[in-house]
Image (cartoon, rainbow, N blue to C red; front, side, top):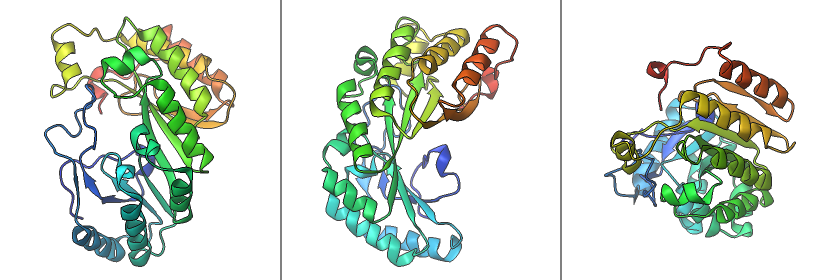
Length: 289
């Protein structure tokens, strides 16, 4: 496969074919994210994509899922996406499920009918980064969105009948906004009722604006205990809608995963045991992005 740079995919797509359709991120201004810095956003040529599909046809015949990378493939025009989906089915007829990243901005530029059209062509799952439901945090990280707009985008995905996976970042409010970050993020999730919630823990990167603020002592990272209390508060404030809940990313101090609301009480008990020192945390040297 013709990959440019480090191709990032959600943990849920570990067994999918990874087809890089774009390079980088169409927005690329978030202060916490170092994934695509110094990499201009570009669309890969149809000839290159076709060559990758031919490779996948030869080497990935047993796989029926495909994930479209890099960041925010949904930003492409409807015409280009339809063309791309047709190519996928032409070369990989066994593929029944297509997934991709979609920002609130990209979702806003798609109508319900367009999303339904993509669903009819195999689009199964959209991964959207909420990061925080707190507008102060969103402003500080230069997300370029307010919580109300991200909420509307999430609801739109659900209305189109698509699987919505939402990413949240613990610690992104620093120590000063930790409590507000947790509660308001839960409120937004309650409004969207995503099918999956993926919780990561913020880790500073040297090539980012926020990482440099951490190094300079301007942004104070929450302690491990504060992160656990954030996670506890987030889960405690979630309503009883059904969803997959994953806080077992490599960045987590306390990996937990299961289904809500079924596992809610068990999650809260596990977190409290960790806060009390009964359950050991993942040491920093073993945590990673």
